[in-house]
Image 1 (tube, helix red, strand yellow):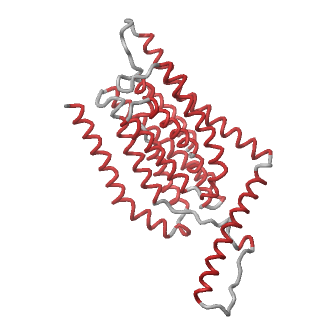
Image 2 (cartoon, one colour):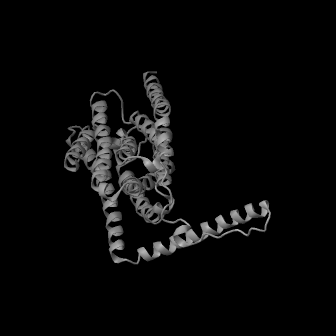
Length: 340
């Protein structure tokens, strides 16, 4: 009875957060959308930073392995280490290849919305399902979620002047780390004080990612200024002797032809870029470093869990590592000081 009451309470918090964000932020973001071409770099950095904080506020992530090994999911340590966690890493590696090829074409915002939706899917499944098949889907979605991080990192460079690149890079990365800091900090407080368990943390994470989805939808869109028809001299004048209906049909056909040619031009440009060895090396190391970091953060929880169980004096004792959130909070706040 108490557990159901707590779950209802945290579900209510998630709904309240979503309603508050929708009513309080939508008007601001809609105004920003309409005036995106005149927005200052500070305003754009602030809007993007809010998204970064919301998507990185994932308290349950610090305790995902204890949750998988816990009584609700009831997976074995061998299953988690050998069958579940590797799926997310491989999915991330494969997804990053497609993300790298399409992010600029999709103009960043769509990729960020996909990222937020994948995050919602991950923690909705973790909260509602317990089967092995559902966890496989969770890992695939998480791999896509992790791979689409590149859209958040590069969105800002398409809307601000090059002279502000260093500042906006610092601010958006700081927002990313602030979200992770509060995520680990609050998760540690909740677990240490036993206010919630690892299962109930999923509801806080789910609420934050749903809010991030709403915020991503109302972020300013980026105009396709690099692949316009003017750049490729594709503009065609309509005959003056045709009727209005024929003229509208010709204009529609023109746009379709332009879009096809622009898509083909983008593909050719992309192929030319990826024949550059510098770009290939950069892409390789980004994918490799991202996957390695994900592997470390995933398997370190398994290591801590094993050490906690080994420290238990009784063989029947099932101890859970309790300082995961504190570690995440400490390393992120130190990194934040270095960035700022």
